[in-house]
Every structure is written in structure tokens, then in C-alpha cells.
Image 1 (spheres, rainbow, N blue to C red):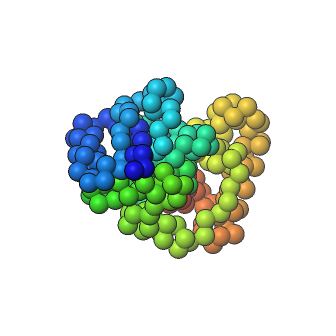
Image 2 (cartoon, rainbow, N blue to C red):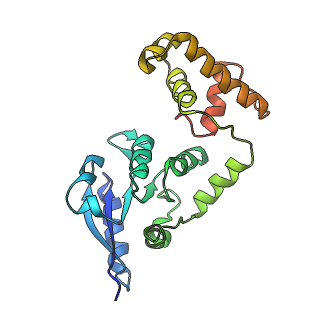
Length: 215
């Protein structure tokens, strides 16, 4: 008999954790084993969580969306399933783009039907597509999404988050002129894709649709 796939679960909702435990316990093949449950992503670096085959992570931890942390974990080679209350297409798309190999919506009640199969697929090095994820990917491919550099993305997020160009420049350690260039390039790329983004509001709207910024 093959060993069970080990998972570490990060979520701060007791009712969700209870559901996850129940679904795994009900699996007749006992194919998945929970080795860690926590409410803080920092706990993934030690103990059994550090070597868990798959991480099951809520998208909102401690009141904040954790796209950047998911991206960092993915770069380290961790295999991630996001299990979240959010089902908006731009949020799902951003989580998958950050490195989640499967996205399961709590709101759409996908957990019982899809969680174990998603964990097994991701543990095997594959991706797993749920209905909510498929809808988000279809919506994303229905329009052309420009490719931005990391600096362009960061400058957009900071500026569209409410900072002045001068404040963005200080935070990024670059000149205000360079920030202006990054933002102009972003607008130009949207324009070439047939998407109007000439004003701050218009740029925010398009960036929101692409999951670059949050509401």
C-alpha cells in the first residue's frame, strides 16, 4: 500500500478545518494525512509542515490576502492548493498565476467533491482544475492580458494602492521619473491590447480585472 499524501493546512476558520478533517476521514482509501494545522504561514517552515507533500492554504490569513506569500512558497517548490471563500474570477486567476496548482472555492461548495482529488493530483506534480478555476481561466483568456515586468507590476500596485509617484519611488528605491516611465509602459501595453487605461481609474479597472490589484 502506498503511503498517504501528507498535507499542512493553514486556515483560521474552525468550521472549515472541521470540514477538511471530516472529508479526509471519510475517504475510504485513507489517501491523505493531515500532519499540520495552523493559522500562520510562518509555521510551515518547521516540524512536519516543512516536509508536507501539499499545502492547503486559505487565501486570506490574518485579515490579509496572501498572494505574495503563495508566490514565495511556490518558488521554493512547495505544492499549493488554495481553499478560499473567494470565487471572483480575477482573484482566482491571480492566485493561480501566483503559483497555486489548484483553486477550490468554499463559496461554491467545491471542498467535499474536489479537495482530496485536487490534493492527490497536486502531490503527483499535476494541476487540478475545479469549475471555479475553469471559469476564471476562461474569463482571463477571453481578453488579452499584457505581460508586465516585475517593476511595472510593483509600481502599478503601489500607485494604484493610493501612493503618490514620489512615495512609490522612495519605496522602490528608484527615481520618480522611472516610476512615471513604468506606469506609462503599463498604459501603453494595455492600449496595444485594445484596453483603455489612460487615466488612473481606468488603469485600476484593468489591473483589477487581471488580478494585479485587489479591491
